[in-house]
Image (cartoon, rainbow over all chains, first blue to last red):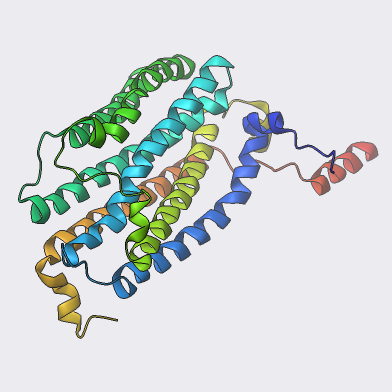
Length: 245
Length: 69
């Protein structure tokens, strides 16, 4: 049994996290590219045609991962914002800000791909059903978080205001998730259930590989962005100032 | 492989617009995000050069120099 422990608190300091993030970015970038290539190959060349929906079902390979990322990233953003607020840890708040853009983009992708799937499947691009409406609210929460932070000049005040919004909005995530059970909706039920493992293994694996690709993409992009934020905000800090001098 | 020709692949069984529309929007948005981010990184680099990372070697060298002084 090893008694060696990693001092996690060390990496709560932007000066220590900055080089660590820099070392991780190339790894996540390479893995992202590989997973996207493999996932798209399986999705378009290995997975068979769906007997009910024909080829239009291939949209789920990007729709489901994007919808999940929109929710995952919101929870992650709220947790980081909450940590940044509660423990006065500015890196946590910077992470929340870095995550918000990517989360908003994935939520938008899930709304657009969902309506492009809805048209051939249901005959309409959009209906005001529970899942779609609650996902639209998620999009507005992201936009609210981003514009609220942009409207406040003092970064730490912007962090606190954003944290309040993000934490209150967290209630929307379980609503999205359970909406297909709580309300009678047009949207189909959860994709990942015990039953879904009866779907063709190649269909499931394409979706899971692209899900992993989206995760790796998010990590790489968020790390690059948080490094930009650190340098923008801490340009006066001694560890950065000495590099300039 | 269940596509006998490229045009069949592009047609996607009549759902080409929806399938390629979805992947196209995804590509544009994620690609756009990456491009904007790289632009931001270049802008940040103009304000301040890359900070010096405190490696063990750098620390040792700094210590050696300060010893000589």
